[in-house]
Length: 501
Image 1 (cartoon, rainbow, N blue to C red):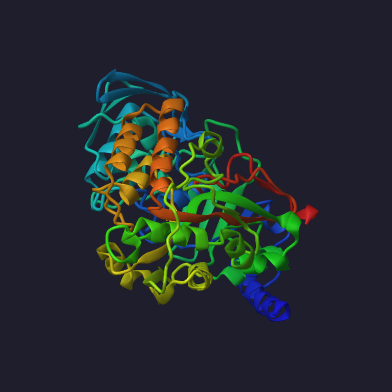
Image 2 (image 1 turned 90 degrees about the vertical axis):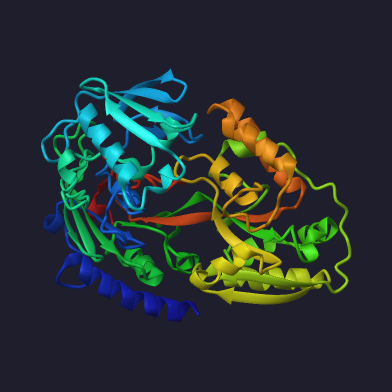
């Protein structure tokens, strides 16, 4: 098996090396590329690199587009292009901008440029996900001060402005036809100079950067959806930094070249609380008792995941210290041949494998399981309609604001738009309302964990494991970010020294 993998990986690496060098399968020398960082990414752009889409996360990871605010590991807002902010009304904030920021087109950061970006974001179609349900306005109040207001009270507004989808670009980025071009219009340590469709992108060091000047002269990006090829690129030295190496490729690589980063993503078994066998709380408790997440982590993820203690995992380091219990008080009932329909989707390669083990574990406890696996496009409608008794889902637990309340509200409140557990409980709703209205900081984190406890007490969903992403960094590479939120990757501190390979 490993021999077959290695042969397949070797062939993929040759093809990728040729693509990254532009002429031959051999890796370029230091003289050829001057220490440029060669980056192999998982997904190509899907929306022409418009910052109002998920492509914004690529711009952020390349260090070319920047936001007013950054987040620390706890999700608290930190200054970035904005040096500070204050509340100037119940629904309004005033942000003060840095005075030394130059965009890549030579223009200066100003309140007018910030207001222009934020206003255009509110009018984009589709609107950036971070602004779903938010009515936002922005206006310059001075050369370097901008007022941002919302129709409703939003204690998370500073965190919201940390989303890469609200990165501030020069006014020249916004074209008369409504499109947005990040080429040469960002403010980060690297200037985007060329994009070759869904194949490659090129960035050069921006010597006018307001922060620390990068030692790397640039970044050469290749989009490599094939996981075997990405793993092989690291193994053969044709890439310096590699995104999302599959678990299956990790055993073929030198352990010193791979780094596991906890992700804010939980693999969960959602149980249909409203209809079918799991409307009976004792059968939900029986399912919880039957699960063996440790076996799933060891078998499917080869130990490269964390067994779940709750909905929120180690990517949010404060969660474990504040966990407020949540153990179900319901006694486990007898399945006695209860028939359940278990569904998942095939787009994430590991989920069908997880489904096989979950089916075995539930059947060992006495359930009779029918398993359904489809592509997500043909799965979501039935899932949301309650066509399954149980659903296995890999779910991001913090969305663009870096805060888990939106996920918990969406999945577990009576009015949640993604409530696949079909749970509606007034105690859960009260706990979520309290968390949603709390100010960022210790009070909000405590309220979030109290809401988690209410959800877990009812076995509304059974968290199984927290995923990790495997990031590859060649020998000689330094200063690369290992960011659980996948916002940062190549920074002004990043460098690649070929001679150390």
